[in-house]
Image 1 (cartoon, rainbow, N blue to C red):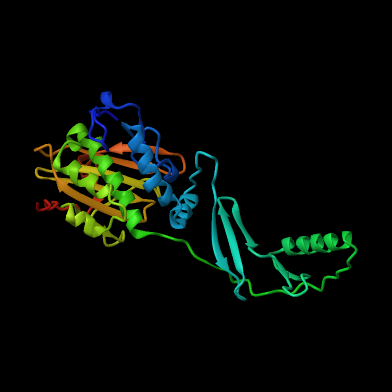
Image 2: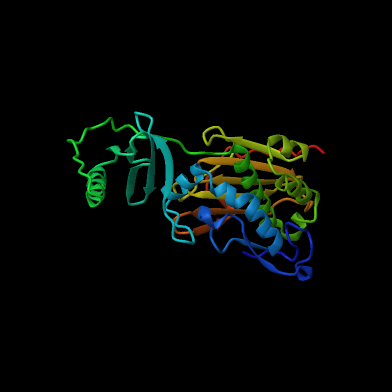
Length: 314
């Protein structure tokens, strides 16, 4: 992936003047982003956005769930997500989902009488409940107390779980990815331009919303896949699509995460000419990617609904 990258995309300072330089993934590694798709940047700004944006974004259980379902394994080897929920009687429960199965656990498996301090019951799933009951009995026996377990009682197996998703935080994450795609397409000119200024003001806004984009003259289209006007035929089911196209007057940057979340961002084209484009199809599980461009995808009939973007007004 060759393009001119001599300026930090975050500080807009020449990299040779930066104290420390490292590489920023166009799409975060925690989402299955390839190590080959990176932009050089100033380390301090990379770390700042990692704390402000990347870490909070990956705490969202919905993204974790999609990552696990897509086969993403983190750098630390984590390949699961734990969701909190409740049992039919209201007791808290957890479910840990991984590629090789699911594990259900009761958050408070031992019910203790607050008056006597004695165990009243044990809750759990499958053999785990029986094993825990035997452990409790053995522990009391070692203290000279005799407990006897009743026959197990089967409870309704419905477990209600939820997955958190902060829509504004997700939008900010996708906006940052869209900006880095403009840099990967046009190089330094995408950084030191009105387009770069607009993206940076939006990305650096904590609590960014769609209004933030409008205030910075960034056009945005965010819709469900079936309703989004721009759709690529990604060869990887559940994969990511990153694309950027420079038309005569507009710079269109398109981000699709896990084939679920779609967003397109539009700024003015700082290059002054059209034709430059990049398209990346990413397999989150293997971190492999296929590189293409708009012309090739249009010719092959793999783009649906591509219309002429409207240049955002200043």
